Image (cartoon, rainbow, N blue to C red):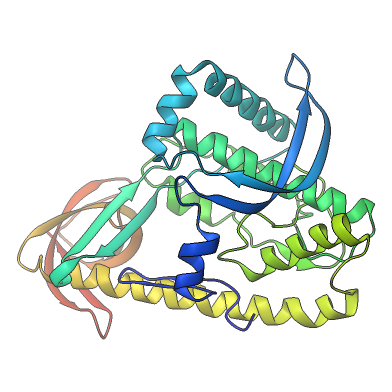
Length: 336
């Protein structure tokens, strides 16, 4: 609980549990059976949700697939197509309730044998990503409602402020969209009182879907399982009141560690590109200094340039990698 979450670094993972226990008892290894908390969803022929029920279960992991394989399944298999249709119905319902759907790419930085650095930009808007995201939100939303209706102490995440119109009118096809939209994204409020989550377009929200890597999710699953099996929660409200602030501090520290470590390895990679050029997009200008977004690395940095150089926001430019110091986090770029 002091760490709060598993830590994912480019060179390794630091699990919440002993690695052997994770591999042998917790991970969804193909062909194994695992204890689970399952959500049963009853839908009618028009895919409207008619009822839900949580159950303590045993699942068999039939097959592990990639998001690419999952997209093929959701687009071509009759059952997969039906699941995709259900997911889109859930998404449209959330949009009608005021949700803001943001699907930004993610950067995967990995360190291979011999210290080889691999940097890959992954889109998060495939059919498989949409289905998985909607099923996770449905699970978390239903868990929040279950806990509220049963008056079980719980850790809720909420966002009572409505999404501004300025965020809704941004052009998602603009290469600078990731920089523009992030200015409107707000961290959810964390507390023991249920409240609306307007950016997700749902009434109640807690997190239960990742008990292997998030301690708060494990605590919420324990609350539900204990209610199902024993008729009473495992944790009291006072215990959660003392627990969740410590978890949140651990999560903030964890995110800082992950962010700094990822940036170190990106700078390490850019160090190997000294003397060459990379892509950039001008994000703002101020005198002799301009801010440039690096689309291949998903972050913004500053560049010095002479007065004779005329650039405006949105210009695509080539940047000369002059000097990089990964330890001191110094990145010197210039316009070519």
